[in-house]
Length: 75
Image 1: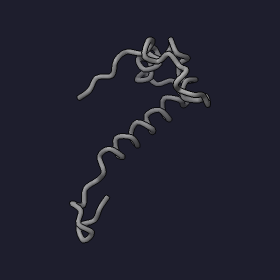
Image 2: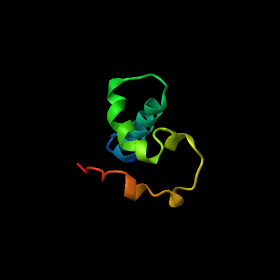
Image 3: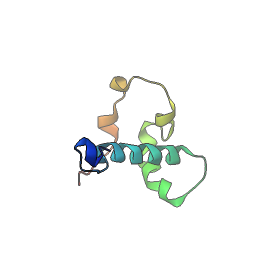
Image 4: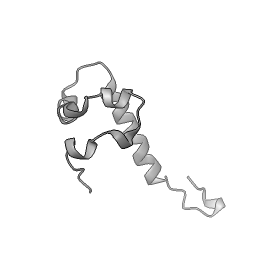
């Protein structure tokens, strides 16, 4: 956030805020508790390893993600 006295608008950086929300969402998705909201994302990720996809250290260029995951919806 750039303060008013530094020439900013005293607003949050929405790009960083969006990334932070997504990171927290993935962290909650990887928790072992069984919540109803996890059914849809885990079923979509089941073709590529489920939440194991987020737990592994790998080079993303070798994963066939474009073939197995649905397209993202841009809002």
